[in-house]
Length: 88
Image 1: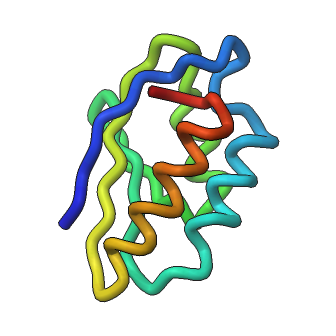
Image 2: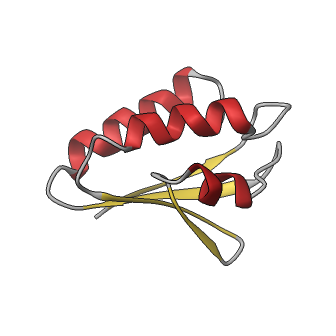
């Protein structure tokens, strides 16, 4: 299992467009990919789950990836999060 904590830096938070980009990045992988924040857990392959977290600027979340292709999935999702300027 691979995990990493992030803090949202995008002034608009994780809204519909970046949430859909995250879902698109996570969907091809067989691993379980989740975001954890404030006692809530979201499946990163579900845009409704991601949007339900209501991640605003300054919110912290943990990315958790577990499965056969976790290394590749973790790399792809963390790369998108950082390069898109969503979180650090």
